[in-house]
Image (cartoon, rainbow, N blue to C red):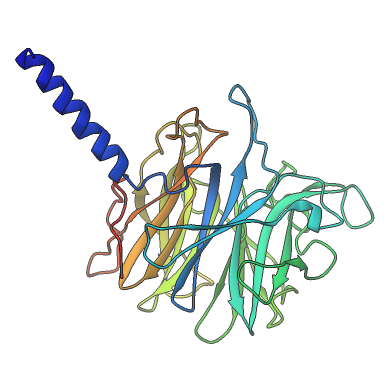
Length: 320
Ligand code: CA
């Protein structure tokens, strides 16, 4: 065989092996978006949306939410559809971004979808909460109505500003719900996790678009979100001394995701490493409405600031 042909074959072999070893995207047999990780009993559970739009679609089609789990960061168990907007009698819309948290022996899954036009709302985006005693369900509507409806916030003119819930439980057991598109809204939740405690507050972190993710580390509070305005989204963040702010802008964590207009953060510590979940459009036939969840390492500087995440095809290594 000619020497150059051998070189080409060797190159193809190397590329194929790299492809087989590559962990990202981590879910390859369906399109998934909006990752929300949760660690429970040494297992990492990943709550996701599900893209089913056709290849030429110009909008989202997201019928349900999935749960996956892993104990080694590379082998994932698919628990299937564990919740859909059909679970909520008041919902009409798609299954947009969501996050599940554990408290008082129960799993509370906060979701964004759209509301019917009825006595509780004239429609628009709304946030519901489902509850289960197990991380992968069965989940039921915790309150039989939306927790947040569009009319409860009026700072934005569009009817879909009440999306993308994230819930954070502080060390003093105060629980906070953050959410929003266009502006970031937050409110304390009662200990039952299904009622708001007081008045909804609204603010606009620098470049904020949507998709907040709030957590605390070493006494510092982090508000991570999708930002950047009229170009593909990036992930940016603020920090604060309290979950009630004031928040200080700290910069960009992740650049635009390849082949996807949106990107969405889910950050968690697991087995002594920090993981950054997000989505891109890199599966074959993927795109902005056919996204795929990925995970890469995230690193902190000694002062608590976050190093920029390197988005890779290789992804992360197995953990015991
Ligand atoms: Ca609103």
